[in-house]
Amino acid sequence: MIETIYYVRHAYRSGFNVDHETGTYTPNSFIKHPTGIGSDPPLTSHGVDQSHELAKYLLEEIQPPIDAVYSSPMYRCLQTLKPTTDKLFQEPNGRLKGGKIRIEHGVGEFYGRAGWTHPSPPSIQELNKHFANIDQDYVTAVKINPNGEFINELHERVKKALHKIVSALDADPAGPKTLLICSHAGTMIAAGRALTGVMPDDPDTEDFYCYTAGVSRFERKSKESKEVIGQWDCVLNSETKFLKDGAERGWKFNGEESFVAFPESESSNSNNADKPSSPKL
Image (cartoon, rainbow, N blue to C red):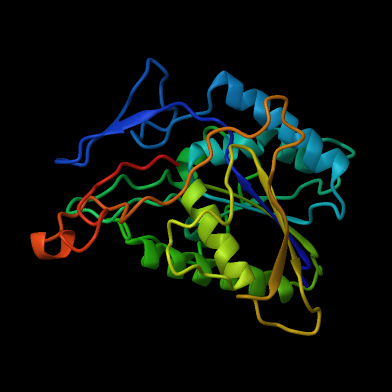
């Protein structure tokens, strides 16, 4: 049974732009996107440094140790995990030698609802070109709407994904007790709310933090219950003490986070309803 979840936001990434009219995503720097997907940038050199600091923390400082690893399909998440999973899975004395990363779209990027199609995440075949240790047999438990999501839909998606992930591991004969997930800012906030069962009336509330390469830790309240949602205590909230530069690039929801234009009658009743925003995750 899973007793501990470490939930990590990817490290500091390079940027991209989105055309709000066409939905076209493009890099906003000279840095090439390895997967060729406009919304799938790599880490910056600073982010790579963070990924190594994170690995040292995850492999040498935390207890209990990691038993299972899940990740968003985005390049920056797997790049963040690489120093950790290379040592866990590939080194001769690696604790989980031969282990694999399960790619789960349910903990993937949050795109605001739009009238156009957002870029699809990279396929397993594409990720295999860049990373070892990808589980070839795992089938994602949840798929994401290609037209994006409203904030309430994101929260429901993350609830569903976490329920399926943890329930499957609870039933695993190998008996894993500790889960590591690497994901994105908005998804990380929604995960904290789902696991603790504490959903604020205003989604813009700053409750669960999500700094780059920050680690949140959740402990199961009871080993007797098979329930997942609302059954965890948050004992670390995006911890960054192990990072040389500390907490960086925090994020929170801001209004609808949607590219959809709302009628004037609705927007007049809300300060944020008609304000589109681009992903900053």
